[in-house]
Image 1 (cartoon, rainbow, N blue to C red):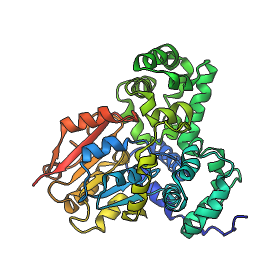
Image 2 (cartoon, one colour; image 1 turned 30 degrees about the vertical axis):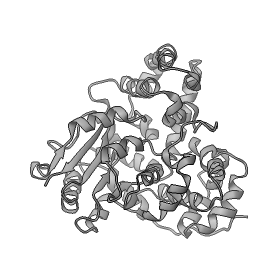
Image 3 (tube, one colour; image 1 turned 90 degrees about the vertical axis):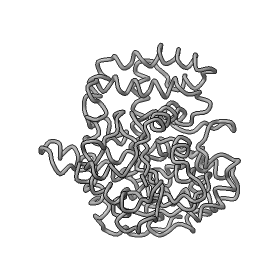
Image 4 (cartoon, rainbow, N blue to C red; image 1 turned 60 degrees about the vertical axis):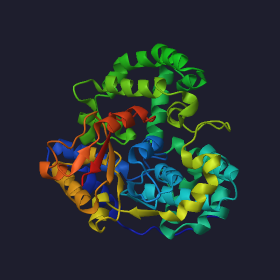
Length: 413
């Protein structure tokens, strides 16, 4: 039986998220939408991170001397960065559920007896024995806060750890969104998993053009995607919605991003495609997986796990607590799309203080261009070199295909 522990009453996590998401300027309607997103974001959003760590490592040129500060999200990328053998990694996240998920993955990696056991728990993630595996081999090594989270109950009264029996990648805000998208596709007699059987890029293109593309012209899809709340499941706050759409219909933007995911990379080497089209990793031994879950990296990642730290908090606040030179690689995911100009200036002021010459900052944006020019003071940006060519290459290489742009800045000097 799971140990019952009362959850402490604390509103600190919700305040962290709300302070990051709710715009300080804007009308009442915009603020209400922001608060609705902040409420949705308090639970599990991403069971798996949706940025490509292989593209990240190439752009960041991570090596043995690299000291990384990154947003944690689902935790997969920080673990994958360990394959590049950096000097250290610090993960930070506002979301209590994401922190608990990171701690759970670390404990599973460290204490499960074999790669096959890790695979059953994290890759298959729907095995009926997984709650027992958690109780016997993982829970004893978790901190109290993480144990309380996983042994607590969700909104419908189920133990949260039961998600690893039901399928963790079908849970959370994104998992629910993908499930809803699959349901809508089935209304139009489209099976999203059909594309995973394609043997070539040409066949993938044919399936997309014939089966997927016409769905985006349906009136229901066009109507649904006009509303910012409809994309909360993608982790897109209202402030990011307008940037993502630009001058296009949102249905057209989403079709273009799905087209890249479906057609630009072989599905037999793209685990993001498997997550999108089958709602989980492939279960065959040769199915694509992120670097940290690949069998050949298992011993290496376990041995380097002590170099990875997880912190619950705000990225800018962590920078403020850090001395110059503490970090030289910074991964912001798409967090800046949430920020107003004052928050961006505060962030880049701290990045400029902490980063030494040669330090690299990588981030993603919903729309293709970098959002910094015109919003961050010119004097701050003058200390950074925007690597346009490498940014375009990283954008092309990102197999998740969700974002309009991947951007790399390097500290001058």
